[in-house]
Image (cartoon, rainbow, N blue to C red; front, side):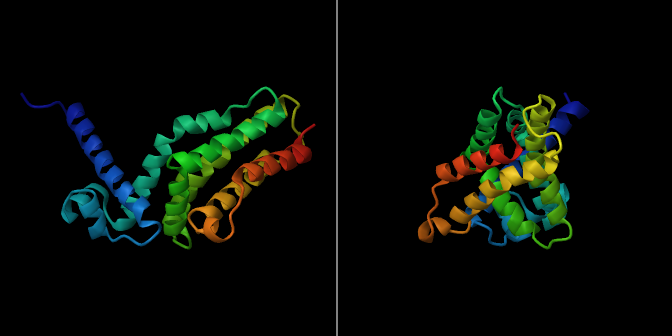
Length: 207
């Protein structure tokens, strides 16, 4: 009995996801080094023609991976977007949540790969912004906007600018220590960094 169209589409989507996941694992191991489309095909355990058929050119494969990683992180982004009762504790929780994503899940690798592929790239730069950076910024912005509506954070502040100012030092600190190798020559106490970011943010934006 032939499979229905819906079942076939699901099988194709599962196959695509599997290919992308294997390529993603390879990209993470390469630590920012350029990977050719042929290497991607090998990592994805498919032929070059099959990879091109499913995704197109090399840039299209990277774009598809960034989109999938965004979708996989949606539940974590929802948590980041939800405020807690106390403003100070909520800011500390947001930083801790983002730090866990950077250190223990795919977020750190996503930022590293996205920057390596996207810097000064006409197509992949905007894709990384859309699929990698903006979801984090917008989730943090949602949390901060909720605190503004509660009267716990300055209403005259731009929540988007505030969100960027909250997460940027943590992202820089993480990249400094890991992807850029700063931990070996300029070690940084990340817990202390998070605490100081939190205290400075609450002083600047709290009521």
